[in-house]
Each structure stands twice: as C-alpha cells, then as structure tokens.
Image 1 (cartoon, rainbow, N blue to C red):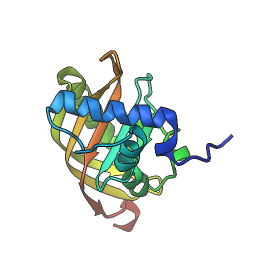
Image 2 (image 1 turned 90 degrees about the vertical axis):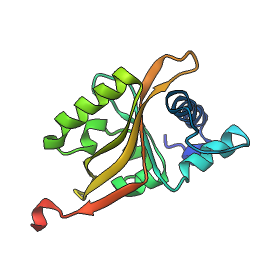
Image 3 (image 1 turned 60 degrees about the vertical axis):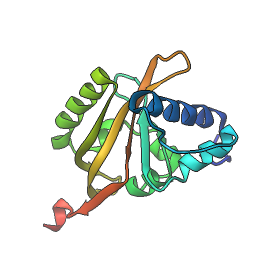
Image 4 (image 1 turned 120 degrees about the horizontal axis):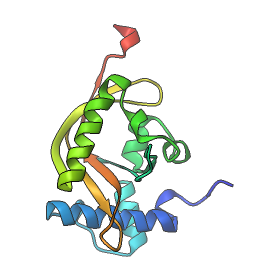
Length: 163
C-alpha cells in the first residue's frame, strides 16, 4: 500500500530528519539548517531545502532511505523509487570504487567535507557534484545507523551516448 502522506509528514521520515540534522551538528559543529518549530515543520523545511540531502542505511548493500525534493529531482525519481534504490547505483560502476573509498573515510572520521565526484540519474544523466559533505548518521543512542550527503553545487555533464 502506498503512503499518501508527503514524505515529511510520515513519522519515520520525521524521526530520520531529526537524526540527519542532529548528526550533522554532532560531526561538523554547525547546523545543517537554522530552524525552529515542530518536528514536522523542520522535516518539511529539510525536504524542501535549496540543497540536496540524501542518505542510506547500514545494510550490506545500503539502500537509500532519504532524499529531499532537490535529490529526487536531480536523480529523476519519486520517493518510492528512490527509497528502494541501492545507494551504489547513484554512481556509475567506474566511479563506485572511489565512492566506496570515500564512504569508508567518512565512516572512520565521522565525516568528510569537500567531496566531489560524478553521479548518474535514473535516466542516465551524469552530473558532477562538488563541495559535498558526507557524514555518519547517528540514532538516538548515538549509534551509527547510516551515512548522508549534502551538496548544493552540481553540473550536468554530457551523456556517454551523446559524445
């Protein structure tokens, strides 16, 4: 059954939004967003933020579990499709080794900043992300429950079949 509520009104997304914001503050000692208000209002503001926020869980082949509206538009997916996608599929196979290395570095240090790399949308549109922050997402007991990324700079690059 499809949930008819917008993502930011779903209890598990509200809780996850709080985790994203808390974890970013924990690792980087600055807020991801300067917000006041109810948990739902804060979740809605994060979902509609003018930058991309994505996250995945801790499965062996991590699944995306959050993408705000900017992320959904960039990867050309709806919420249901996005949150069933393995995180590795956001990068082309040739880029996955570098992506894995940087995710491991973020896991070792809690976060990395100024990440850049090529990603690919569901339709094959390639884009170069720049100045991304990747951080470990912590649950309410400060246990690692995933990783997230935030960026506001990207540039579309030529599709391989156009060159």
